[in-house]
Image (cartoon, rainbow, N blue to C red; front, side):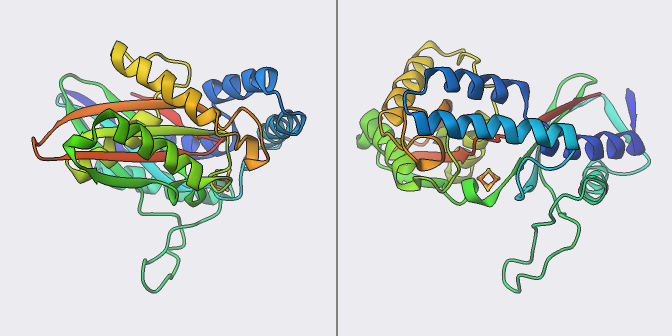
Length: 279
Ligand code: SF4
């Protein structure tokens, strides 16, 4: 059995909250830099330049890339041979979020859904926990702003809608979202499972490193096809026109009921913040 201290998790989550918000992740930066070369629209190129300049200032000054520092969303893989010493894992994550958002002067955006009263410390975090074999503990943080999250959808398609129905849904979702999710976006698509499973795998898919190939060759082809069609929409950086509407489309699938075809689209913005912690 491997022991991981509660305090060590708090510290690492605290630091990750700040780093994810201050520093554009390497895969995102590389994708935006590449888009700056391939973008045909002068206005689009200028927007991409400004995004990179904004990210450079944020990293240098240790300030947030964007004012919406997001809901702290975590995907955790907890080994079945790991014990947490001194408290619970979820408590440690929430304490890390509390400290990170306070010390980093990151906006606290979480409120009661009806009264709209702010919780004051950006908690509770959203924690998706998966129990895996072994003695590892991997925590992936993805702060998610509302501008992009609000553009996401789950649809219960009919099985007869098939692949064409799925493609239409994804492309129309991006078209209708327009400039709202601060393009260029990263599009996560979850196909199958139940309603909630589709939504969960869409978000997980969205967080796959940009530039990585889907291990399923058929899905890799579908991702490339959807990316081309989305970039043909001409929405462009910040919705001001151009070829670069999306940096990537990532798909995950899961078996579904014979009478059902759930599809979820989760959209992330050009900041696509994420930071991984490994114990
Ligand atoms: S969509 Fe992203 S870049 Fe735009 S306001 Fe929200 S967090 Fe900021």
